[in-house]
Length: 255
Ligand SMILES: [Zn+2]
Image (cartoon, rainbow, N blue to C red; front, side, top):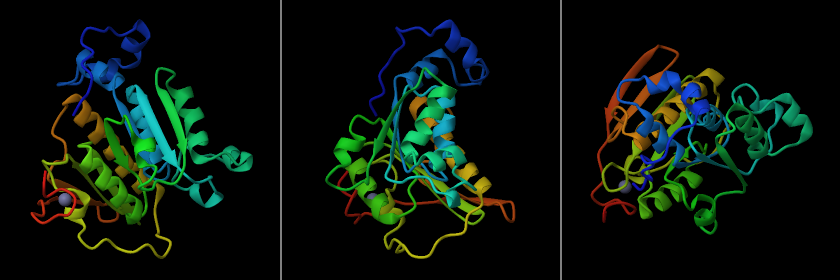
């Protein structure tokens, strides 16, 4: 990982007030806050997972947020995609535009870079270049695998989550150290029917992704490396599933 060391830099009086309640967390300090400020985190998919994740990353003071999405918000998104409001649907803003203006209002210290487009092998370097960490907030495996292979190839940490109904999962991938998405999902499900989803479930797992990103960038706590947290809000039951690298993985076995 190549997070810039900004220990020589100082925080403004406004930042010291804004982040006061996280600066007093055990294991978090001004050096950690400066690491967040110097980091570039990309959020792929500004939907059910990406909206809460981006909100918490902006609130926490990530210096540079890159938002990538190719859609325009619709009324049927509003039960869960909490950065998109009725006013954005009526104005036909893109999701990256809709999210950007609210994140800038929330925290003007954060540079928000809105990149409208569909991720492909051809444009991924352009869309994700310069990112220190990426959040997988997509809803399809086609994009996920393109993202996975790019992150593995460029040794960029990737925080994966998925959600359906009231259930979800989250894990943090550090290429060469943990399993990658191809190790975890050797036979990815095909895209098909419209999935049920409760907004609160997307909120929980998107927030977990933000926490994992903050932990990975700053060194706080223990990221979910080689383990997947699986939860069901319906039953209130959570479990930690150990996941292993595939020695024959076509993406990461040579790392
Ligand atoms: Zn792998």
